[in-house]
Image 1 (spheres, rainbow, N blue to C red):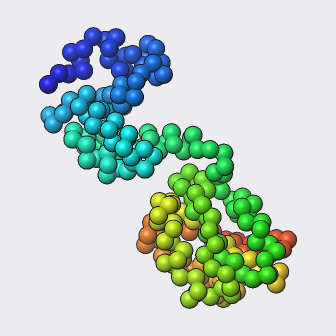
Image 2 (image 1 turned 180 degrees about the vertical axis):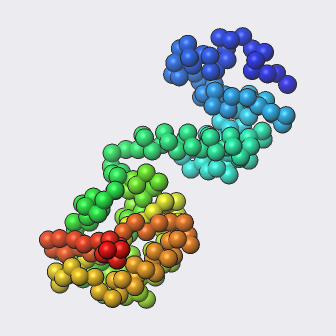
Image 3 (image 1 turned 90 degrees about the vertical axis):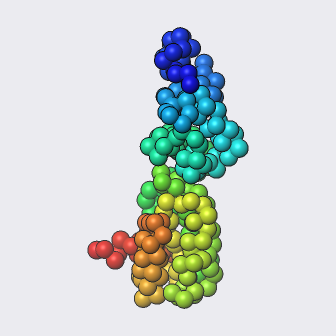
Length: 220
C-alpha cells in the first residue's frame, strides 16, 4: 500500500493546495486533502475514490451514514467530512432562503395571513443555521389542540431534516391575546419537538396590524 509521504512533495494535494490554491486541485485531490491519510483498511487514494463516487451519486442528499460506510473512514473522519460539507452548503445557500432569527423576520414571511377571514396555522421549517427551508399551511379553521396534531406539524419537518420550526396562526378578530387552546397547542408541540429533536422556536399570533409571541409570553 503506497503512502502519501512516499510521493514527491509537489504531487501531494495539501502541498499543491498551499502552492497553487484550492482551485488548482481536482475533485479527487480535494478529497485527498480533506482525508489526509489512510489506514490499515485502505489508503488515502482508495478512500478518496470511493468517497468521490458517493458524492457523485448522492449529491447534496449525502448523509453521515453514506460517508461512514466508505471503507477506511472512521466516525471521526466521517464527522469532519460532513461538517465541512454542511458548512460550505450553508454559506453558499441562495438568497431566497432567508435567515429567520426573530419573530419579526418570521412574520415577514407570513404577511399574507393578516387579511385571512379564517384561522390559518402555518409552519416554517428551518435548518441548523436558521435558514428557511419551507413554509406550509397545516390547517385552516378554528385552532384546537385536537385539530393541530404533532403528527401533521412534524411530518414535513422530519422530511425536510429541519433542525427547528416556527409555527404561527392568525386571529381574524384582531385580538392578540393567546387563547387557552393556543397555549395548549404550544405546549404539546414543544414537548413533541423535544422528543423528536426538532426545537419549536416560537409560536406567533398574527393580526391585521400586529403580532405576538406565545412562547415568549409563557416564559414572562
